Length: 121
Image (cartoon, rainbow, N blue to C red; front, side):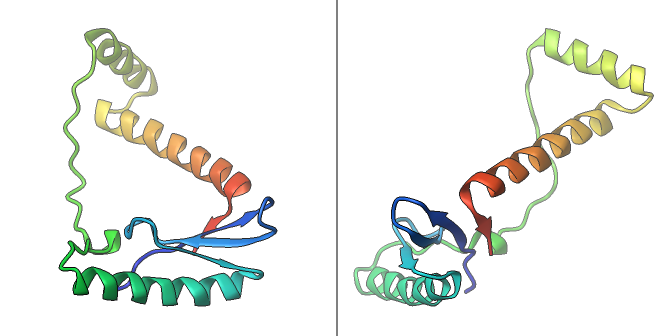
């Protein structure tokens, strides 16, 4: 199984911290990015080995989870109306307009998070 790793620089620790979000508490430190990546691979193996020996639940990597692309969402009536009006102004469907707004927000928040916290590898 291939688990994703998040890597960021810690000013406090003066080094790189790598975490595996799918495995609670699984993290590693390194003076360099490469060292942190090597260490997190070891930490993942130890985490999985310990979970197996203790018969604990082992989550599937998020990357293996299938997504349908379908989201059902309830909104307040006023928000629904506002979104419909804006979509009409743009000449697109409500679905297209909401998809556009979500993708813009996700891109912006990812850029901010990457600039402040580190990067995903």
